[in-house]
Image 1 (cartoon, rainbow, N blue to C red):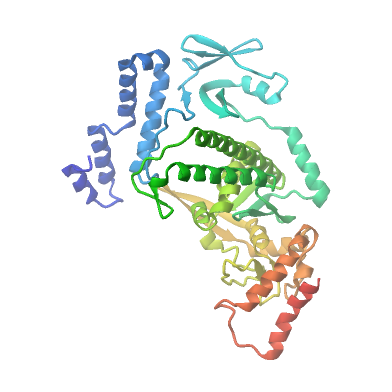
Image 2 (cartoon, rainbow, N blue to C red):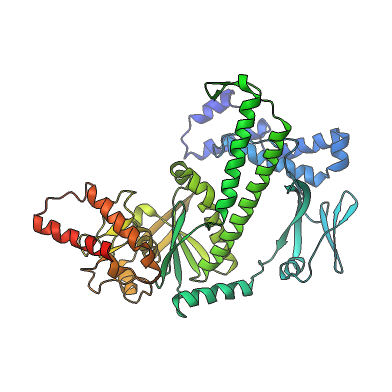
Length: 486
């Protein structure tokens, strides 16, 4: 299609011209690059093979065709670099379009059966589990059978797509409320809750309380260290058994590597550890999402690029997965009756703005907000999360794009700062030292504030380099010395 004359002529149209879109759609129909054509091809391949016709139902083959076309479509529109193909030994899944044909779920009394190709398989269910009771009380739309390798053993699972609302675990919500009440007091809930993301930590604020915490706890460090040890053993095994394939420590291009049985065992062990890390991380992020949603009903996040975080902090982002936490937060907010909003960082500039209205650019290494106008000194991420609670965000759709318009209400932020529980602000916002502006949970970052102020004082940015008298120089350095003593 790309080599045809019609395609090259259509490229000359303006992107906003509707004729360009219509011509591309017609070309895809002519060359069979549509979802219907992919489904038809999958059905033909199924009926042409005895094994496929015996083990793969018609609806499952149609879903495979749809999934294949979506992968090609992502490559076609530049959203993916390539299409990934699963090999013979990898895990796979089979899904039907409805529960009327196989794979089909049948509930007979307290017995749950999976019907696949006229054969019935008994599913393990726990009727004492409220999640299972709620799931089987809803209408089943379709089901998915997938294969997983756990601890060296092959396991088969069924995932069910249901119609209705998700189950709310009231006991889990009560536990989170009790922990937050013991930490901040009874009156800790607000309307909005803002989260400022970093590669490892997040800052949380709802205008009443503010604090920092790790995205993933230190419990994962042991599993991550074990995975790295196995990776080094696998690398040594490859180099010892393929000495001719490496030249000066670099793999020669186009060489085929021979893998021993020991290497395959290590690979399976590493795969199982990575699965445990991903499952544990997902569990921790689910608990963190429920904890954050107990602080407010509307969660607000900055619209940042997580790919840029991956390029700059690859290992930290790989361990904590902030993009996964964002998806979990939005999903939990919808389940609990709230909603999620994105903040336009170019319009609000939360990390550069002070409560007094002063805007100053900061370098990335400056982790402390120190205002030269009002004297306010706070951890940069905590202040950014606090200001995020007082943003107003609107989404406008222009074609396929969504444009976010955000504004910051500084007057509301200043009035809320007076009654804040974990931060103390000067009444006139004209003076204050780091030790005065930090209390409660935020005192833990006091030493980090002092060291960050020392670093920022050694090498000032262009916006700070102004000629000052020796008296002003000494008075400006005095709060830093007081903070170091504290």
